[in-house]
Image (cartoon, rainbow, N blue to C red; front, top):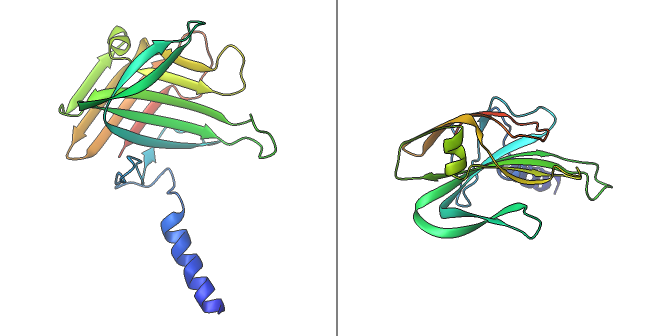
Amino acid sequence: MKVITGIISCVFFTFCCPMKNNETNSKINKNGIVEKQDFKNCPSDGHCTISIIKNKKIVIQKDEINGIYYTLEDNGTNSILKYTYLKQGHKDALDDNYIEEVIIPFEHTKTNLELKDAELKEKNILFGKHCYCKGEAGYYVIEKGKLFLSIKEDSYLLKFDFEVSNITQKISSIDATF
């Protein structure tokens, strides 16, 4: 009985545990999540992930207090790359998690995307900060930075240096191959 339990545990941990940030040769699973990842700039106190949402476009909207949020709409030529940094909070505190995310819409029919400063705003590149941090939580259109995305046969190279005005941020540079 102990042998069977040991085998089941090994199989479970082999197939169900998340991959570490420094592994390469990634594959994108059926949910669009990159399974093996190489993030050179992920802060060491958290975990970074990348997901690709295929055949969707982003629609930016504003709420009654002029805050930005987005919705997704079906679109056959566009996809969205979502880079997320998560710092787990204390398990006893409900609002102690800290999340930053970068939302990059792109045309998946093109092989390269290069944008700088004002072009980032035109393409609706977003930065999201989700935390208990008054005055800073929410989504922001990124207006300053340099983005390079290369796509070759389901292999992606992302280099993005950016800053968001008037808030603090842990992520200001992304260097990922997946």
